[in-house]
Length: 346
Image 1 (cartoon, rainbow, N blue to C red):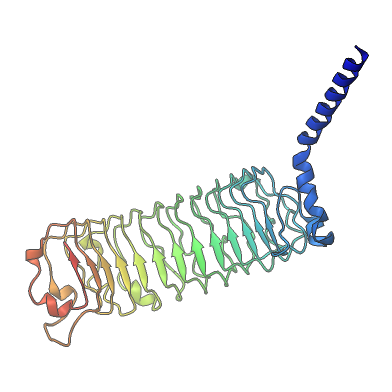
Image 2: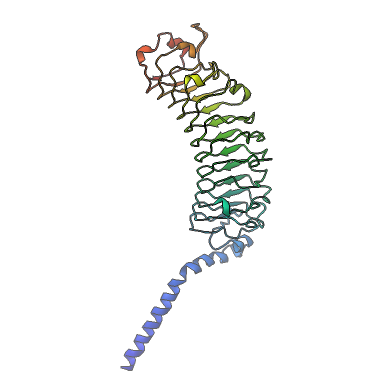
């Protein structure tokens, strides 16, 4: 009988130890990496919530960890990935220890503008990319570093952009503001001398932003409520090549004559608007999208000024489907003028 009791006691103790071992196994596994690579300093500093691989010693991966706050960032880290968590705020001083940061990735969180300190990013003098898209921001964070070249604020709840929002950001080349609630921006982009790409799709704009940087190359304004294009607009921006105005309310009355007849344009998207005529475009244009309008006639003069064999358009893509014209409305001379177009969708 005593032997049986002894065996049962030993078995229970073994089960208890096994349970305690499995209960803390996750912590042992996390701490186990500290013993690898001969206790390298960067691995010792790495917070338990994140990974700091030895083959990328300046990167800290904390994405998709259900984090509610930003963990400690070691001073040697240059790239921090915090996307797809539940972070709602960033207090001043969080990045003060890591002033060498180059990339800060925080998209797909729950960031609230009222919970972001006014000087959170101000000490990051080398910051190049700041990704804050898909959050709950209502305004642009204050005191952003002048070093930033790529700023992503799309898919937030921003309704107003203050004149000081991008002040001094002369290195900014790419700005994403699509998917917000912006109605007007005034001349807030005027000082962004290096800006080449501006995306403001899916906002509440009623007019094209003015005072844009002269170096702008790509302008995306689809899914707004824009009705017109200002006269001489494109002559102000000689580098502009790609313009997308799809899904707006543009009418023939809102287009001054020859407003699109500028040699620098390569792609023009006017699909899903209210046009009844094909606007005059430059012979240098290569891609023209006019589908889903109310166009009733095909005018060859919109593409070529004369029927001369040497006078032809560089268009390679022309979409006219979902309008009020058919293939029979296209004149035979189009074969000369539009010789580079493989197929016209009507």
